[in-house]
Length: 228
Ligand SMILES: N[C@@H](CCC(=O)N[C@@H](CS)C(=O)NCC(=O)O)C(=O)O
Image (cartoon, rainbow, N blue to C red; front, side, top):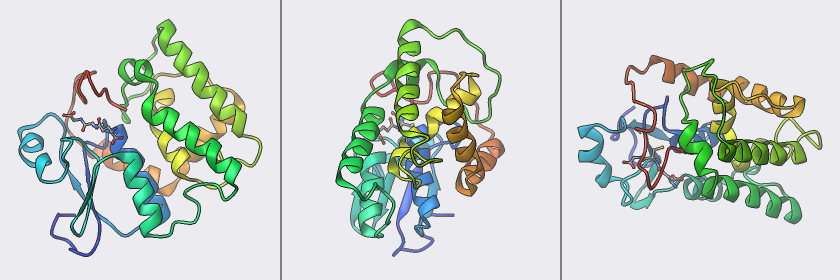
């Protein structure tokens, strides 16, 4: 798909599907919700990325969304905008208390877990990368599993019944746990299984496998903004 595909339709700028976890979050939420949009892929850490990203994203990062004259340049802000602009019913739980909890979890993911994000970078294609997590990463893993287990089993298979923004925010972590062989309890394993079975997720993984770029660990991001 190209930037000129349909001027009325949102255009989502993403990085490499294999590596760009922040791109995955926005793309997955939009695709699963059935939002009509075009995609422009700018491979990370390339001259093309550096030359073109400023046309779309004032932060210089992906994902970014262009809709008419509007530019939105952060994964969570993009999900929120699409939920409002396209009246996506299940973006957040309907109940005010559940919604506040879901937003707390989504924001905790969006703002946190830097050790896990740095030491266990997303690599959709990779499996069996066994490692001994540092204490800081183990702390992040334990906290994420505690979040998932506190919700799963209530309504399942998703964190708040229906697949929503909070599930999209954690999606790259589910993929990382597969890549690095992180053991999780039954309910969390079922959430990861449901995630990879989503048609939208399967499409992303298929396209990630078809990509040819290889980035060294730690390359897909900056020290200030490690891969998400
Ligand atoms: N908080 C941002 C983080 C975006 C981000 O760091 N994206 C990475 C790719 S996953 C990026 O664009 N890195 C390129 C660079 O920093 O040059 C979001 O949620 O969208």
